[in-house]
Length: 314
Length: 289
Image 1: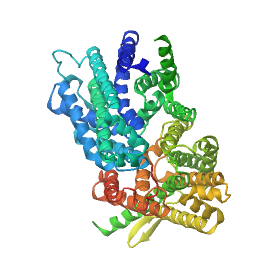
Image 2 (image 1 turned 120 degrees about the vertical axis):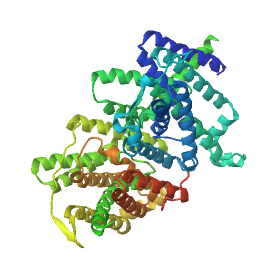
Image 3 (image 1 turned 45 degrees about the vertical axis):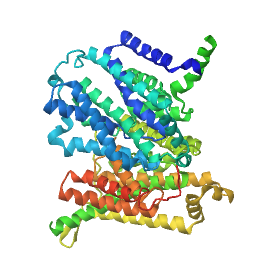
Image 4 (image 1 turned 30 degrees about the vertical axis):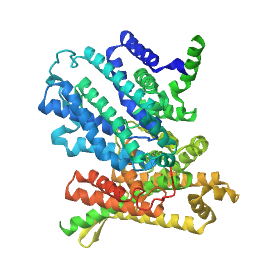
Protein backbone atom coordinates (compact mmCIF):
# COMPACT_ATOMS: atom_id res chain seq x y z
CA UNK A 1 0.00 0.00 0.00
CA UNK A 2 3.01 2.27 0.14
CA UNK A 3 2.35 3.09 -3.48
CA UNK A 4 -0.44 5.37 -2.42
CA UNK A 5 1.56 7.59 -0.15
CA UNK A 6 -0.38 10.61 0.82
CA UNK A 7 1.71 13.20 -0.98
CA UNK A 8 1.43 11.36 -4.25
CA UNK A 9 -2.29 10.98 -3.76
CA UNK A 10 -2.74 14.64 -2.89
CA UNK A 11 -0.76 15.77 -5.91
CA UNK A 12 -2.65 13.46 -8.23
CA UNK A 13 -6.09 14.41 -6.96
CA UNK A 14 -5.51 18.10 -7.02
CA UNK A 15 -3.72 17.96 -10.31
CA UNK A 16 -6.97 16.49 -11.63
CA UNK A 17 -9.00 19.27 -10.01
CA UNK A 18 -6.72 21.88 -11.58
CA UNK A 19 -7.20 20.09 -14.88
CA UNK A 20 -10.97 20.41 -14.45
CA UNK A 21 -10.49 24.16 -14.17
CA UNK A 22 -8.81 24.23 -17.56
CA UNK A 23 -11.34 22.14 -19.43
CA UNK A 24 -14.62 22.80 -17.66
CA UNK A 25 -16.56 26.04 -17.10
CA UNK A 26 -15.76 28.08 -14.00
CA UNK A 27 -19.14 27.90 -12.18
CA UNK A 28 -19.03 24.14 -12.42
CA UNK A 29 -15.54 23.84 -10.95
CA UNK A 30 -16.38 26.31 -8.19
CA UNK A 31 -19.42 24.24 -7.34
CA UNK A 32 -17.37 21.03 -7.26
CA UNK A 33 -14.71 22.46 -4.98
CA UNK A 34 -17.14 23.95 -2.46
CA UNK A 35 -19.29 20.85 -2.52
CA UNK A 36 -16.30 18.63 -1.83
CA UNK A 37 -15.44 20.70 1.26
CA UNK A 38 -19.06 20.38 2.33
CA UNK A 39 -19.01 16.62 1.91
CA UNK A 40 -15.66 16.06 3.64
CA UNK A 41 -17.20 16.80 7.03
CA UNK A 42 -20.08 14.41 6.48
CA UNK A 43 -17.73 11.75 5.12
CA UNK A 44 -15.53 12.02 8.20
CA UNK A 45 -18.52 11.66 10.51
CA UNK A 46 -19.96 8.73 8.61
CA UNK A 47 -16.80 6.87 7.72
CA UNK A 48 -14.49 7.43 10.68
CA UNK A 49 -16.79 8.03 13.62
CA UNK A 50 -19.85 6.09 12.52
CA UNK A 51 -22.34 8.94 12.89
CA UNK A 52 -24.80 9.29 10.07
CA UNK A 53 -25.99 12.86 9.89
CA UNK A 54 -28.94 13.97 7.78
CA UNK A 55 -28.67 17.44 9.25
CA UNK A 56 -25.49 18.78 7.65
CA UNK A 57 -27.43 21.63 5.98
CA UNK A 58 -28.04 23.02 9.48
CA UNK A 59 -24.33 23.69 9.93
CA UNK A 60 -23.96 24.80 6.33
CA UNK A 61 -26.64 27.41 6.95
CA UNK A 62 -25.02 28.42 10.24
CA UNK A 63 -21.78 29.28 8.46
CA UNK A 64 -23.50 30.87 5.50
CA UNK A 65 -25.80 33.06 7.58
CA UNK A 66 -23.04 34.15 9.93
CA UNK A 67 -21.01 35.32 6.95
CA UNK A 68 -24.06 36.89 5.36
CA UNK A 69 -25.02 38.81 8.51
CA UNK A 70 -21.52 40.20 8.79
CA UNK A 71 -21.31 41.23 5.14
CA UNK A 72 -24.85 42.56 4.98
CA UNK A 73 -25.01 44.57 8.17
CA UNK A 74 -21.51 45.24 9.47
CA UNK A 75 -18.44 44.81 7.34
CA UNK A 76 -17.10 44.58 3.85
CA UNK A 77 -14.15 42.21 4.08
CA UNK A 78 -15.00 38.71 2.76
CA UNK A 79 -12.07 37.11 4.62
CA UNK A 80 -13.40 38.40 7.93
CA UNK A 81 -16.76 36.99 6.85
CA UNK A 82 -15.24 33.55 6.41
CA UNK A 83 -13.56 33.73 9.82
CA UNK A 84 -16.89 34.68 11.38
CA UNK A 85 -18.56 31.78 9.57
CA UNK A 86 -15.99 29.37 11.01
CA UNK A 87 -16.43 30.82 14.49
CA UNK A 88 -20.20 30.45 14.19
CA UNK A 89 -19.73 26.81 13.15
CA UNK A 90 -17.56 26.13 16.21
CA UNK A 91 -20.00 27.86 18.57
CA UNK A 92 -23.01 26.08 17.07
CA UNK A 93 -21.45 22.63 17.26
CA UNK A 94 -20.22 23.29 20.80
CA UNK A 95 -23.77 24.20 21.83
CA UNK A 96 -25.56 21.24 20.29
CA UNK A 97 -22.63 18.79 20.28
CA UNK A 98 -22.64 17.75 23.96
CA UNK A 99 -26.36 17.02 23.63
CA UNK A 100 -26.18 15.17 20.35
CA UNK A 101 -23.11 12.97 20.64
CA UNK A 102 -24.48 11.18 23.68
CA UNK A 103 -27.25 9.72 21.51
CA UNK A 104 -27.19 6.41 19.72
CA UNK A 105 -26.52 6.70 16.02
CA UNK A 106 -30.16 6.29 14.97
CA UNK A 107 -31.35 9.06 17.29
CA UNK A 108 -28.39 11.16 16.20
CA UNK A 109 -29.54 11.15 12.59
CA UNK A 110 -33.13 12.02 13.50
CA UNK A 111 -32.14 14.83 15.88
CA UNK A 112 -29.83 16.37 13.31
CA UNK A 113 -32.51 16.35 10.67
CA UNK A 114 -34.89 17.98 13.12
CA UNK A 115 -32.27 20.66 13.79
CA UNK A 116 -31.91 21.37 10.08
CA UNK A 117 -35.66 21.86 9.74
CA UNK A 118 -35.80 24.07 12.81
CA UNK A 119 -33.05 26.29 11.42
CA UNK A 120 -35.02 26.43 8.18
CA UNK A 121 -38.11 27.68 10.00
CA UNK A 122 -36.04 30.05 12.08
CA UNK A 123 -34.46 31.67 9.05
CA UNK A 124 -37.69 31.66 7.06
CA UNK A 125 -40.23 32.82 9.65
CA UNK A 126 -39.02 33.54 13.17
CA UNK A 127 -36.02 35.69 12.30
CA UNK A 128 -37.65 37.06 9.16
CA UNK A 129 -37.07 40.74 10.11
CA UNK A 130 -33.31 40.09 10.13
CA UNK A 131 -32.99 37.42 7.44
CA UNK A 132 -35.68 38.82 5.11
CA UNK A 133 -37.33 35.40 4.97
CA UNK A 134 -37.55 33.65 1.63
CA UNK A 135 -36.15 36.63 -0.27
CA UNK A 136 -32.75 35.99 1.23
CA UNK A 137 -29.93 38.43 1.89
CA UNK A 138 -28.17 39.92 -1.13
CA UNK A 139 -24.74 41.34 -0.42
CA UNK A 140 -22.70 40.79 -3.58
CA UNK A 141 -22.12 44.50 -3.97
CA UNK A 142 -21.25 44.98 -0.30
CA UNK A 143 -18.02 43.05 -0.62
CA UNK A 144 -14.89 45.12 -1.08
CA UNK A 145 -12.09 43.66 -3.14
CA UNK A 146 -9.19 42.40 -1.06
CA UNK A 147 -5.56 43.24 -1.87
CA UNK A 148 -3.67 40.02 -2.64
CA UNK A 149 -6.36 37.53 -3.58
CA UNK A 150 -9.56 39.22 -4.65
CA UNK A 151 -12.13 36.59 -3.70
CA UNK A 152 -15.10 38.69 -4.68
CA UNK A 153 -14.26 37.78 -8.27
CA UNK A 154 -15.10 34.22 -9.36
CA UNK A 155 -11.74 33.44 -10.97
CA UNK A 156 -9.67 34.28 -7.95
CA UNK A 157 -12.32 32.83 -5.71
CA UNK A 158 -11.74 29.50 -7.39
CA UNK A 159 -8.04 29.64 -6.53
CA UNK A 160 -8.87 30.47 -2.93
CA UNK A 161 -11.53 27.77 -2.59
CA UNK A 162 -9.11 25.32 -4.15
CA UNK A 163 -6.42 26.14 -1.60
CA UNK A 164 -8.95 25.86 1.23
CA UNK A 165 -10.07 22.47 -0.06
CA UNK A 166 -6.45 21.39 -0.17
CA UNK A 167 -5.98 22.55 3.41
CA UNK A 168 -9.10 20.78 4.66
CA UNK A 169 -8.15 17.63 2.81
CA UNK A 170 -4.66 17.66 4.30
CA UNK A 171 -6.16 18.21 7.75
CA UNK A 172 -8.34 15.12 7.43
CA UNK A 173 -5.45 13.14 6.02
CA UNK A 174 -3.34 14.19 8.98
CA UNK A 175 -6.15 13.35 11.43
CA UNK A 176 -6.47 9.88 9.97
CA UNK A 177 -2.79 9.19 10.58
CA UNK A 178 -2.73 10.42 14.16
CA UNK A 179 -3.62 8.55 17.31
CA UNK A 180 -6.81 10.58 17.43
CA UNK A 181 -7.96 9.18 14.08
CA UNK A 182 -7.33 5.68 15.36
CA UNK A 183 -9.40 6.51 18.44
CA UNK A 184 -12.26 7.67 16.23
CA UNK A 185 -12.25 4.44 14.27
CA UNK A 186 -12.01 2.43 17.48
CA UNK A 187 -14.99 4.23 18.97
CA UNK A 188 -16.94 3.50 15.80
CA UNK A 189 -16.15 -0.20 15.92
CA UNK A 190 -16.24 -0.98 19.61
CA UNK A 191 -16.97 1.71 22.14
CA UNK A 192 -16.57 -0.55 25.17
CA UNK A 193 -12.98 -1.37 24.31
CA UNK A 194 -12.20 2.32 23.89
CA UNK A 195 -13.45 2.88 27.42
CA UNK A 196 -11.28 0.03 28.71
CA UNK A 197 -8.24 1.57 27.04
CA UNK A 198 -8.83 4.68 29.09
CA UNK A 199 -10.20 7.02 26.44
CA UNK A 200 -13.45 8.89 26.74
CA UNK A 201 -15.90 8.11 23.96
CA UNK A 202 -17.71 11.34 24.66
CA UNK A 203 -14.62 13.51 24.17
CA UNK A 204 -13.53 11.71 21.01
CA UNK A 205 -16.96 12.10 19.47
CA UNK A 206 -17.43 15.68 20.56
CA UNK A 207 -14.12 16.68 18.99
CA UNK A 208 -15.00 14.83 15.79
CA UNK A 209 -18.41 16.49 15.74
CA UNK A 210 -16.91 19.95 16.17
CA UNK A 211 -14.24 19.38 13.50
CA UNK A 212 -16.68 17.98 10.95
CA UNK A 213 -19.34 20.61 11.46
CA UNK A 214 -16.86 23.46 11.44
CA UNK A 215 -15.71 22.20 8.05
CA UNK A 216 -19.32 22.24 6.94
CA UNK A 217 -19.79 25.78 8.23
CA UNK A 218 -16.66 26.81 6.32
CA UNK A 219 -18.21 25.38 3.16
CA UNK A 220 -21.35 27.37 3.98
CA UNK A 221 -19.51 30.67 4.22
CA UNK A 222 -17.66 29.90 0.99
CA UNK A 223 -21.04 29.31 -0.66
CA UNK A 224 -22.32 32.61 0.69
CA UNK A 225 -19.35 34.56 -0.65
CA UNK A 226 -19.36 32.76 -3.97
CA UNK A 227 -23.08 33.25 -4.64
CA UNK A 228 -23.31 36.64 -2.95
CA UNK A 229 -26.62 35.78 -1.34
CA UNK A 230 -28.15 33.31 1.12
CA UNK A 231 -31.70 32.06 1.47
CA UNK A 232 -33.40 29.50 3.75
CA UNK A 233 -33.62 27.20 0.73
CA UNK A 234 -30.15 25.78 1.46
CA UNK A 235 -31.34 24.05 4.62
CA UNK A 236 -34.71 22.77 3.37
CA UNK A 237 -35.51 19.11 3.86
CA UNK A 238 -34.94 18.27 0.18
CA UNK A 239 -31.28 19.13 0.38
CA UNK A 240 -30.69 17.23 3.62
CA UNK A 241 -29.74 14.00 1.93
CA UNK A 242 -27.28 15.54 -0.54
CA UNK A 243 -24.09 15.24 1.54
CA UNK A 244 -24.96 11.70 2.59
CA UNK A 245 -25.73 10.74 -1.01
CA UNK A 246 -22.47 12.18 -2.22
CA UNK A 247 -20.51 10.52 0.58
CA UNK A 248 -21.95 7.17 -0.37
CA UNK A 249 -21.59 7.85 -4.07
CA UNK A 250 -17.92 8.59 -3.62
CA UNK A 251 -17.26 5.80 -1.14
CA UNK A 252 -17.68 5.88 2.63
CA UNK A 253 -14.57 6.45 4.72
CA UNK A 254 -12.19 6.95 1.80
CA UNK A 255 -10.25 10.15 1.57
CA UNK A 256 -10.83 10.81 -2.11
CA UNK A 257 -14.46 9.78 -1.88
CA UNK A 258 -15.79 13.32 -1.26
CA UNK A 259 -13.83 14.70 -4.22
CA UNK A 260 -14.90 11.99 -6.63
CA UNK A 261 -18.45 12.03 -5.30
CA UNK A 262 -18.82 15.81 -5.54
CA UNK A 263 -17.49 15.77 -9.07
CA UNK A 264 -19.77 12.93 -10.18
CA UNK A 265 -22.81 14.36 -8.39
CA UNK A 266 -22.48 17.90 -9.72
CA UNK A 267 -21.77 16.59 -13.19
CA UNK A 268 -24.78 14.29 -13.18
CA UNK A 269 -26.98 17.02 -11.77
CA UNK A 270 -26.03 19.33 -14.62
CA UNK A 271 -26.39 16.67 -17.28
CA UNK A 272 -29.61 15.15 -16.03
CA UNK A 273 -31.46 18.32 -15.19
CA UNK A 274 -30.93 19.23 -18.84
CA UNK A 275 -32.66 16.04 -19.91
CA UNK A 276 -35.47 15.63 -17.37
CA UNK A 277 -36.77 18.18 -14.91
CA UNK A 278 -37.40 15.67 -12.17
CA UNK A 279 -34.21 15.64 -10.18
CA UNK A 280 -35.56 14.03 -6.98
CA UNK A 281 -36.82 10.96 -8.75
CA UNK A 282 -33.38 10.28 -10.13
CA UNK A 283 -31.44 10.99 -6.96
CA UNK A 284 -33.73 8.81 -4.86
CA UNK A 285 -33.42 5.79 -7.08
CA UNK A 286 -29.69 6.34 -7.51
CA UNK A 287 -29.38 6.20 -3.74
CA UNK A 288 -31.40 2.99 -3.47
CA UNK A 289 -29.43 1.46 -6.32
CA UNK A 290 -26.03 2.25 -4.81
CA UNK A 291 -27.11 0.87 -1.46
CA UNK A 292 -28.40 -2.37 -2.98
CA UNK A 293 -25.35 -2.72 -5.23
CA UNK A 294 -22.98 -2.94 -2.29
CA UNK A 295 -22.52 0.59 -0.88
CA UNK A 296 -18.89 0.83 -1.93
CA UNK A 297 -19.29 3.88 -4.12
CA UNK A 298 -17.18 5.01 -7.04
CA UNK A 299 -13.85 5.57 -5.32
CA UNK A 300 -14.36 2.64 -2.95
CA UNK A 301 -14.53 0.19 -5.84
CA UNK A 302 -11.86 1.98 -7.88
CA UNK A 303 -9.19 2.31 -5.19
CA UNK A 304 -8.04 -1.36 -4.94
CA UNK A 305 -7.57 -1.52 -8.71
CA UNK A 306 -5.59 1.70 -8.86
CA UNK A 307 -3.44 0.60 -5.94
CA UNK A 308 -2.65 -2.66 -7.76
CA UNK A 309 -1.79 -0.74 -10.91
CA UNK A 310 0.61 1.50 -9.04
CA UNK A 311 2.34 -1.33 -7.20
CA UNK A 312 2.97 -3.18 -10.44
CA UNK A 313 4.70 -0.20 -11.93
CA UNK A 314 6.76 0.60 -8.90
CA UNK B 1 -56.50 33.61 27.34
CA UNK B 2 -60.24 33.18 26.97
CA UNK B 3 -61.85 29.80 27.36
CA UNK B 4 -63.22 29.46 23.83
CA UNK B 5 -59.81 29.90 22.27
CA UNK B 6 -58.41 27.38 24.72
CA UNK B 7 -61.03 24.73 23.90
CA UNK B 8 -60.65 25.08 20.15
CA UNK B 9 -56.88 25.02 20.61
CA UNK B 10 -57.02 21.80 22.59
CA UNK B 11 -59.29 20.14 20.00
CA UNK B 12 -56.97 21.29 17.21
CA UNK B 13 -53.99 19.90 19.10
CA UNK B 14 -55.77 16.59 19.66
CA UNK B 15 -56.56 16.17 15.96
CA UNK B 16 -53.02 17.08 14.87
CA UNK B 17 -51.64 14.77 17.54
CA UNK B 18 -53.85 11.95 16.24
CA UNK B 19 -52.46 12.33 12.75
CA UNK B 20 -48.91 12.41 14.07
CA UNK B 21 -49.68 9.31 16.09
CA UNK B 22 -51.00 7.39 13.08
CA UNK B 23 -47.87 8.16 11.06
CA UNK B 24 -45.35 7.75 13.86
CA UNK B 25 -46.70 4.38 14.95
CA UNK B 26 -45.44 2.88 11.68
CA UNK B 27 -41.91 4.18 12.18
CA UNK B 28 -41.97 3.06 15.77
CA UNK B 29 -43.27 -0.48 15.07
CA UNK B 30 -40.79 -0.98 12.22
CA UNK B 31 -37.95 0.06 14.46
CA UNK B 32 -39.12 -2.12 17.33
CA UNK B 33 -39.45 -5.33 15.35
CA UNK B 34 -37.15 -5.05 12.35
CA UNK B 35 -34.58 -2.57 13.71
CA UNK B 36 -34.95 -0.41 10.61
CA UNK B 37 -35.74 3.29 10.46
CA UNK B 38 -38.33 3.41 7.75
CA UNK B 39 -38.41 7.00 6.56
CA UNK B 40 -40.47 5.90 3.56
CA UNK B 41 -43.56 5.83 5.83
CA UNK B 42 -43.80 9.52 4.94
CA UNK B 43 -44.02 8.55 1.29
CA UNK B 44 -47.02 6.32 2.05
CA UNK B 45 -48.49 9.20 4.01
CA UNK B 46 -48.23 11.46 0.93
CA UNK B 47 -49.53 8.71 -1.36
CA UNK B 48 -52.50 8.18 0.95
CA UNK B 49 -53.31 11.89 0.76
CA UNK B 50 -52.96 12.01 -3.02
CA UNK B 51 -55.12 8.92 -3.63
CA UNK B 52 -57.70 10.47 -1.31
CA UNK B 53 -57.58 13.61 -3.42
CA UNK B 54 -57.89 11.68 -6.70
CA UNK B 55 -60.80 9.49 -5.57
CA UNK B 56 -62.67 12.30 -3.84
CA UNK B 57 -62.48 14.41 -6.99
CA UNK B 58 -63.74 11.46 -9.03
CA UNK B 59 -66.49 10.17 -6.75
CA UNK B 60 -67.22 13.17 -4.55
CA UNK B 61 -66.83 11.24 -1.31
CA UNK B 62 -63.81 11.91 0.87
CA UNK B 63 -64.41 8.84 3.06
CA UNK B 64 -64.25 6.59 0.01
CA UNK B 65 -61.06 8.42 -0.94
CA UNK B 66 -59.49 7.85 2.48
CA UNK B 67 -60.35 4.16 2.20
CA UNK B 68 -58.75 4.03 -1.24
CA UNK B 69 -55.67 5.87 0.04
CA UNK B 70 -55.33 3.40 2.90
CA UNK B 71 -55.53 0.41 0.55
CA UNK B 72 -53.15 1.95 -2.00
CA UNK B 73 -50.59 2.77 0.70
CA UNK B 74 -50.85 -0.80 2.01
CA UNK B 75 -50.27 -2.30 -1.44
CA UNK B 76 -47.39 0.05 -2.14
CA UNK B 77 -45.71 -0.73 1.16
CA UNK B 78 -46.07 -4.46 0.39
CA UNK B 79 -44.34 -4.00 -2.97
CA UNK B 80 -41.52 -1.91 -1.48
CA UNK B 81 -41.05 -4.43 1.31
CA UNK B 82 -40.82 -7.34 -1.13
CA UNK B 83 -38.43 -5.73 -3.55
CA UNK B 84 -36.20 -3.62 -1.33
CA UNK B 85 -36.47 -4.17 2.39
CA UNK B 86 -36.45 -7.96 2.25
CA UNK B 87 -32.88 -7.77 0.96
CA UNK B 88 -31.57 -5.39 3.56
CA UNK B 89 -33.10 -6.43 6.89
CA UNK B 90 -29.81 -7.97 7.97
CA UNK B 91 -27.87 -4.77 7.41
CA UNK B 92 -26.79 -2.03 9.71
CA UNK B 93 -29.37 0.55 10.83
CA UNK B 94 -27.70 3.49 9.05
CA UNK B 95 -27.87 1.46 5.87
CA UNK B 96 -31.65 0.98 5.97
CA UNK B 97 -32.09 4.59 6.93
CA UNK B 98 -30.24 5.86 3.87
CA UNK B 99 -32.08 3.43 1.60
CA UNK B 100 -35.47 4.44 2.94
CA UNK B 101 -34.57 8.10 2.56
CA UNK B 102 -33.80 7.28 -1.07
CA UNK B 103 -37.27 5.75 -1.43
CA UNK B 104 -38.85 8.83 0.15
CA UNK B 105 -37.04 11.26 -2.16
CA UNK B 106 -37.74 9.08 -5.20
CA UNK B 107 -41.38 8.89 -4.12
CA UNK B 108 -41.63 12.68 -3.99
CA UNK B 109 -40.28 12.65 -7.54
CA UNK B 110 -42.94 10.14 -8.62
CA UNK B 111 -45.72 12.25 -7.07
CA UNK B 112 -44.40 15.34 -8.84
CA UNK B 113 -44.31 13.43 -12.11
CA UNK B 114 -47.93 12.23 -11.79
CA UNK B 115 -49.77 15.12 -10.13
CA UNK B 116 -47.52 18.08 -10.79
CA UNK B 117 -46.21 20.71 -8.40
CA UNK B 118 -49.41 22.62 -7.65
CA UNK B 119 -50.99 22.12 -4.19
CA UNK B 120 -54.55 20.78 -4.44
CA UNK B 121 -57.45 21.19 -2.03
CA UNK B 122 -59.44 18.19 -0.81
CA UNK B 123 -63.07 18.78 0.05
CA UNK B 124 -64.10 18.55 3.70
CA UNK B 125 -66.56 15.64 4.19
CA UNK B 126 -68.59 17.42 6.86
CA UNK B 127 -68.84 21.06 7.74
CA UNK B 128 -71.00 20.51 10.84
CA UNK B 129 -69.92 22.32 13.97
CA UNK B 130 -70.64 20.91 17.39
CA UNK B 131 -71.12 23.12 20.37
CA UNK B 132 -68.88 22.14 23.29
CA UNK B 133 -69.04 24.41 26.36
CA UNK B 134 -70.11 27.33 24.21
CA UNK B 135 -67.41 26.83 21.59
CA UNK B 136 -68.09 25.73 18.04
CA UNK B 137 -65.85 22.77 17.20
CA UNK B 138 -65.62 21.24 13.70
CA UNK B 139 -67.04 17.71 13.78
CA UNK B 140 -64.39 16.46 11.35
CA UNK B 141 -61.58 17.06 13.84
CA UNK B 142 -63.47 15.09 16.47
CA UNK B 143 -63.92 12.24 13.99
CA UNK B 144 -60.16 12.22 13.32
CA UNK B 145 -59.49 11.93 17.05
CA UNK B 146 -62.07 9.14 17.31
CA UNK B 147 -60.49 7.21 14.43
CA UNK B 148 -57.03 7.51 16.01
CA UNK B 149 -58.43 6.24 19.31
CA UNK B 150 -60.08 3.30 17.51
CA UNK B 151 -56.79 2.50 15.76
CA UNK B 152 -54.92 2.57 19.04
CA UNK B 153 -57.51 0.22 20.54
CA UNK B 154 -57.33 -2.02 17.51
CA UNK B 155 -53.53 -2.22 17.63
CA UNK B 156 -53.65 -2.93 21.34
CA UNK B 157 -56.11 -5.78 20.78
CA UNK B 158 -54.07 -7.08 17.83
CA UNK B 159 -50.82 -7.11 19.79
CA UNK B 160 -52.27 -8.53 22.98
CA UNK B 161 -55.04 -10.91 21.93
CA UNK B 162 -53.95 -12.56 18.67
CA UNK B 163 -51.16 -15.10 18.16
CA UNK B 164 -49.55 -13.03 15.39
CA UNK B 165 -49.64 -9.94 17.56
CA UNK B 166 -48.10 -11.80 20.46
CA UNK B 167 -45.38 -13.06 18.15
CA UNK B 168 -44.71 -9.48 17.04
CA UNK B 169 -44.45 -8.36 20.65
CA UNK B 170 -42.09 -11.22 21.41
CA UNK B 171 -40.09 -10.21 18.34
CA UNK B 172 -39.72 -6.68 19.69
CA UNK B 173 -38.14 -8.23 22.80
CA UNK B 174 -35.89 -10.72 21.00
CA UNK B 175 -36.15 -11.66 17.33
CA UNK B 176 -33.74 -14.58 17.51
CA UNK B 177 -35.72 -16.38 20.19
CA UNK B 178 -38.90 -16.04 18.16
CA UNK B 179 -37.11 -17.46 15.14
CA UNK B 180 -35.84 -20.28 17.33
CA UNK B 181 -39.44 -21.17 18.22
CA UNK B 182 -40.07 -21.98 14.56
CA UNK B 183 -42.00 -18.84 13.68
CA UNK B 184 -41.31 -17.37 10.27
CA UNK B 185 -40.10 -13.94 11.32
CA UNK B 186 -39.97 -12.62 7.78
CA UNK B 187 -43.71 -13.06 7.54
CA UNK B 188 -44.06 -11.08 10.76
CA UNK B 189 -41.86 -8.39 9.23
CA UNK B 190 -44.08 -8.22 6.15
CA UNK B 191 -47.25 -8.00 8.24
CA UNK B 192 -45.78 -5.25 10.42
CA UNK B 193 -44.54 -3.29 7.45
CA UNK B 194 -47.89 -3.44 5.67
CA UNK B 195 -49.65 -2.44 8.88
CA UNK B 196 -47.31 0.53 9.26
CA UNK B 197 -47.71 1.60 5.64
CA UNK B 198 -51.50 1.30 5.84
CA UNK B 199 -51.69 3.44 8.96
CA UNK B 200 -49.43 6.07 7.36
CA UNK B 201 -51.73 6.10 4.32
CA UNK B 202 -54.74 6.51 6.61
CA UNK B 203 -53.02 9.42 8.35
CA UNK B 204 -52.34 11.07 5.00
CA UNK B 205 -55.95 10.60 3.89
CA UNK B 206 -57.33 12.05 7.12
CA UNK B 207 -54.91 14.95 7.07
CA UNK B 208 -55.66 15.85 3.44
CA UNK B 209 -58.89 17.89 4.02
CA UNK B 210 -57.21 19.88 6.82
CA UNK B 211 -54.32 21.05 4.63
CA UNK B 212 -53.66 21.22 0.91
CA UNK B 213 -52.06 18.14 -0.60
CA UNK B 214 -48.74 18.98 -2.21
CA UNK B 215 -45.79 16.83 -3.29
CA UNK B 216 -43.59 17.86 -0.37
CA UNK B 217 -46.18 17.21 2.33
CA UNK B 218 -44.25 14.16 3.52
CA UNK B 219 -41.09 16.17 3.96
CA UNK B 220 -42.98 18.97 5.67
CA UNK B 221 -44.51 16.74 8.32
CA UNK B 222 -41.28 14.77 8.78
CA UNK B 223 -39.69 16.87 11.56
CA UNK B 224 -42.82 16.57 13.69
CA UNK B 225 -43.04 12.82 13.17
CA UNK B 226 -39.40 12.63 14.20
CA UNK B 227 -40.07 14.64 17.31
CA UNK B 228 -42.94 12.35 18.23
CA UNK B 229 -40.83 9.26 17.71
CA UNK B 230 -37.79 10.66 19.52
CA UNK B 231 -39.74 11.95 22.51
CA UNK B 232 -41.72 8.74 22.84
CA UNK B 233 -38.73 6.48 22.34
CA UNK B 234 -38.22 4.32 19.27
CA UNK B 235 -40.11 1.05 19.38
CA UNK B 236 -42.69 1.88 22.03
CA UNK B 237 -46.37 2.21 21.14
CA UNK B 238 -47.46 3.73 24.44
CA UNK B 239 -44.62 6.25 24.23
CA UNK B 240 -45.65 7.20 20.71
CA UNK B 241 -49.23 7.83 21.83
CA UNK B 242 -48.22 9.99 24.78
CA UNK B 243 -45.61 11.98 22.89
CA UNK B 244 -47.92 12.60 19.93
CA UNK B 245 -50.46 14.05 22.34
CA UNK B 246 -47.75 16.23 23.91
CA UNK B 247 -46.41 17.45 20.56
CA UNK B 248 -49.92 18.13 19.23
CA UNK B 249 -50.85 20.23 22.26
CA UNK B 250 -47.55 22.10 22.33
CA UNK B 251 -47.90 22.79 18.63
CA UNK B 252 -51.43 24.16 18.84
CA UNK B 253 -51.27 25.98 22.19
CA UNK B 254 -47.86 27.39 21.26
CA UNK B 255 -49.40 28.82 18.11
CA UNK B 256 -52.10 30.55 20.18
CA UNK B 257 -49.55 32.20 22.46
CA UNK B 258 -47.08 33.32 19.80
CA UNK B 259 -47.44 32.20 16.17
CA UNK B 260 -43.83 31.39 15.20
CA UNK B 261 -43.51 29.41 18.44
CA UNK B 262 -45.53 26.54 16.92
CA UNK B 263 -42.59 25.17 15.00
CA UNK B 264 -39.97 25.85 17.66
CA UNK B 265 -41.63 24.82 20.91
CA UNK B 266 -41.81 21.05 20.21
CA UNK B 267 -38.11 21.15 19.43
CA UNK B 268 -37.31 22.78 22.74
CA UNK B 269 -39.38 20.11 24.51
CA UNK B 270 -37.55 17.40 22.59
CA UNK B 271 -34.15 18.77 23.63
CA UNK B 272 -35.31 18.98 27.23
CA UNK B 273 -36.50 15.38 27.28
CA UNK B 274 -33.34 14.15 25.57
CA UNK B 275 -31.27 15.96 28.19
CA UNK B 276 -33.06 14.11 30.95
CA UNK B 277 -33.46 10.78 29.16
CA UNK B 278 -31.36 10.15 26.03
CA UNK B 279 -33.58 7.25 24.90
CA UNK B 280 -36.87 9.15 24.97
CA UNK B 281 -39.71 8.62 27.43
CA UNK B 282 -40.29 4.90 26.88
CA UNK B 283 -37.30 3.90 24.73
CA UNK B 284 -35.56 0.66 25.56
CA UNK B 285 -32.09 0.79 27.05
CA UNK B 286 -31.25 -2.67 25.72
CA UNK B 287 -30.28 -1.60 22.24
CA UNK B 288 -26.65 -0.82 21.79
CA UNK B 289 -25.54 0.44 18.48
